[in-house]
Length: 81
Image (tube, rainbow, N blue to C red; front, side, top):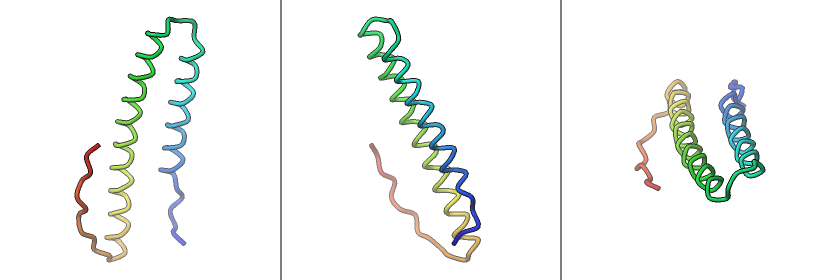
């Protein structure tokens, strides 16, 4: 088993939970449907960006762990959404 504590997973969960809570609050807020949809769309785009950034951080940490253990990895092609 690894000596790493999974802090990245906790941080990701906290971030996603916060964004979902904000989205629910926006849905329940007293404003027009059009404005609510715009806000949700903006938040979803922001969440997608943050998830991609977290994925890059996790990928780099994994690469560091593997190289510390003497394991070499090849670069995988980047996927585009």
